[in-house]
Image (cartoon, rainbow, N blue to C red):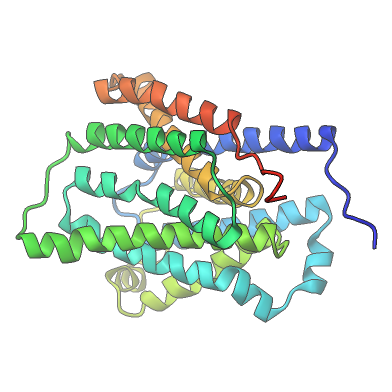
Length: 326
């Protein structure tokens, strides 16, 4: 059997350019999303309705992109329920549990502590990519991860210092605040690695994974509406209560961000996605300065060179396979 063809320099360069472009778009989307949502989503809008709408838009966009690249018919013929549950069902269930834990933790921790502990998901992503995918990090890349965490902590301090803290006794903070957010970070790293495994090892289409995970997530949300306050509000006032035509802007913007997350995770991995998301915090600070006149904090200015340095080091010093390992 002939050995598999390796990617040529032109093909590899084209893929790197695509990843870089998608990373730029995701950082822009992730950074601008809070400002867009604040401007165009009214307080009366039911959260579950906007989330469900976002998942529907994700599915529509993913189907469109699959049809455009000509893979829709092939994926439809090869699709199996077992493959879908293995590739997308497990990560979707993990993400659902992670989101629930984050909601519990956020109510029992001050914003600063929550944000700082939530950044540990970058480390857990690197941890699981090593043990599941055997993707090693060079010494320089490990140092870059530490720089990124330091930048994320500084940005979290800048954000959390302006928000009030949540009071509570020590046991409540530990068992309903710190432990849930740390478990959620572990689950985030595991789910991100499983998505990367499905796309890179099992060759599961990132667009198909987006569709499958959106459907699973939507089913979980619809089930929750049977007992949740949002479900009661939708039954009383209707699904689109509080919506305006402008509400579609953040919904579509968020859906496209979900598509980009899938592409970056598939082609570049969950660790690279972590770099993009931390970089997006700087984009938020920049956009707040441009559109709201709010100058970036000292923490943000200190974090900027750390983020730039960490990205540069991580890209420049990849892990080199030794002769005995090859």
